[in-house]
Amino acid sequence: MSNTLPPADTHCDGATLQIHHRVRPEAQERYETWLRQIIEAAGRFPGHQGVHILRPPAGGQDYEIAVRFASEEDARRWRESNERRELLAVIQPELAQDERLEILSGIDFWFTPPESGAKVPVRWKQWLITTAVIWPLTILVPLLWWPLFRVAPVLETWGLRHGLVAATIVALVVYVVMPRVVRLVSPWLHRR
Image 1 (cartoon, rainbow, N blue to C red):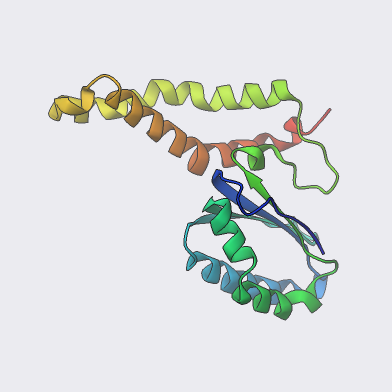
Image 2 (image 1 turned 120 degrees about the horizontal axis):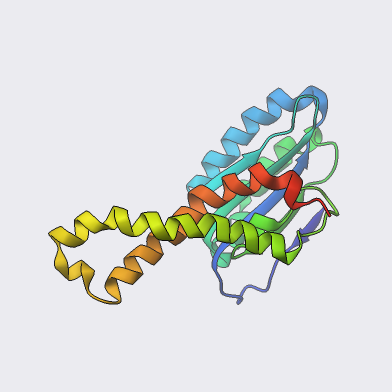
């Protein structure tokens, strides 16, 4: 089993457990049931912020699961928990190979290709996609805040206004827009 884990004292704002499972073809229905159970269990742990699953295409066997936590410490706590260890032992016989797991910090997980051994996209493509996502948000989000700024002028104070807009843009990028955009453009993004 291949696991990469940074030192416990490493601090980061957010961490994603990226997990790869290759499931035996005859076990996919059992795996899907198990997947619901382990997602529910992870959701009860402190710092849990959500799960993103890439299921295999028809006839495929490879599942990519990204479990997001508020910190590396929260991710480590779930990764090393008895509950996760016991659930993994239940499904282990249904896997065609050992689980691959790594912890990614910050935005690394957006641009880390799911295929084993694949390379991270070239920097100019990362820049282009990130700019294409953030640029329209910098136009739209201030317009969405505008009515609230008019009702509560204190929120329009220089610095506070920028912080509210920035926090909204970052939340939209991290949780809503970027994961979908990267999945959509993945074939182009990972082509050399």
